[in-house]
Image (cartoon, rainbow, N blue to C red; front, side, top):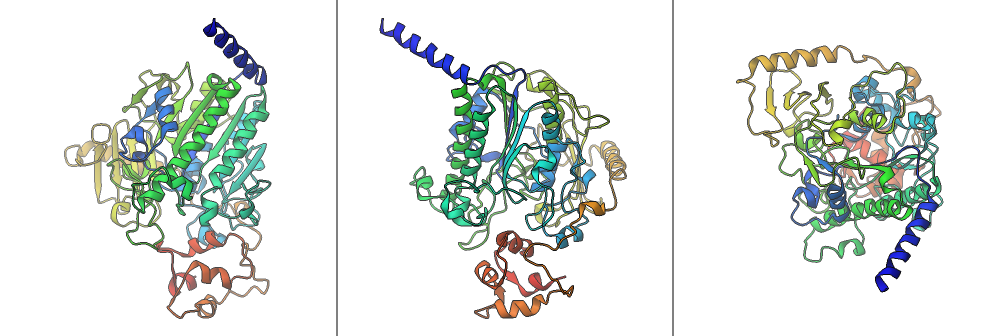
Length: 531
């Protein structure tokens, strides 16, 4: 009798949930993108200490693609590849968006061209509700007249490192007055929580209408921080690992919150959930007080980290859960899937028509998502224009099936790896496969010739960079400002000195980091005063 009563209650609750969210005509999509999270940072990928129960659940209930790669080893171009389905170099996006001056120096526009093929716009035109919550970085935070997220096809947005409504706006996070940034220690511990608050509310409000949702988390980008409550999970772990592990677990909890609301509303089987990371883990600093002291991410044994075209910089987690369609508990170590495939694959999965007259660099990999064998037809190309030192030495790369060729700027250093059998890239086969190397290098040159060589002026700001306006038209005398702001006369500016010297305080941390070329958290006179 008791079991009969329990069953009746369960069925009643289930019916209430389903009535709250009627069955959708098309599947919804949630794309969760972490920041600087390494392949080896997940418990299901073998990390011996970090707890990621909700991501582990996604792996159990979906498919874990081990051979996934992003199409650039830093933030903005990686994200460009996701929402355009094209290589970011086609849109002049080579490194992260920063100030106008730095963008121009790098040969970049100040924002992603809104005329690009855009995943959210296509879904919006197909009748989906669309939203973006979390990191933006498809323009620089300091550029005054960048297009709002609405210009890219989002109905609702709340962001950081971008224009428009800040993720803390309208929330109860009282410490965040003035739009606290992810480089503020307290805000960094709550900024993804706030983004997930918005995401959960958006899902609830969709009520029977299919939706496309980006939830782009802060973790584990600098500034890595954790509250005392976060750290309770790791009482026996010493710093800096304790803070890093706690930050990863906090991000994992946000994934859990999304899965829970889908379950509650009875729409888990009608929702495709994807989890990935925009690039490999940040390089670590060894001493307390250094900028990346708490950046302790793991590549899972892969060579290279963020800013490297070696696998540790571009081979990131990629979990797909779609109950009843994507096989549960499957690990696919073979299929070469990439960030540019997300757009065409979601179109194939949902039946939404693609943008007319668009040629994707990616391809629809729905068969692989469904557990079928799917050989990649299109090669993948990379062009890294940042610094080339240490493991960041590769400037160009190409992947063709299981083969990956990496080249330096001169194209004289050439390394070829079979990256399915040799994920750690320990056995350079360039000499043994000389003909393959020549064919792939020729393909890189051919691809390179198709890329734009100039910046569209329409994609550059017409307004002064925020906080650096100079109505007189004269160049700011940064050397003089440095001398005034260097209060202790030690020859460097720390963030507090830089902040105190500014008249306008918007995007202080972003602007500071744009000057901080070596990432040590201190501005030398040369870094600050350079043209």
